[in-house]
Length: 108
Image (cartoon, rainbow, N blue to C red):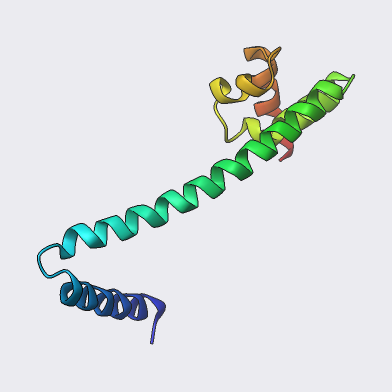
């Protein structure tokens, strides 16, 4: 049995149980379950993201050489927008950001 088929069967079973417990609100209850799972995942992601960004910002601030700062910044510059990174690295300029993004594209 494929994982897609298995998931489809699990969903059908869960919807059947919900229809038994809340026959008038099946769609609403299902949406609430899905939404609550997304909120839990997002909260965990937000905490992890905050930790990573703070660690990079601290390392960036404590570095003396531009090459080191650029390498640290390149870790996130390829995936995180300037407006978010500048909240963690106060002296960040667009030039520094784009140089770090270029570093990430060239060297990974």
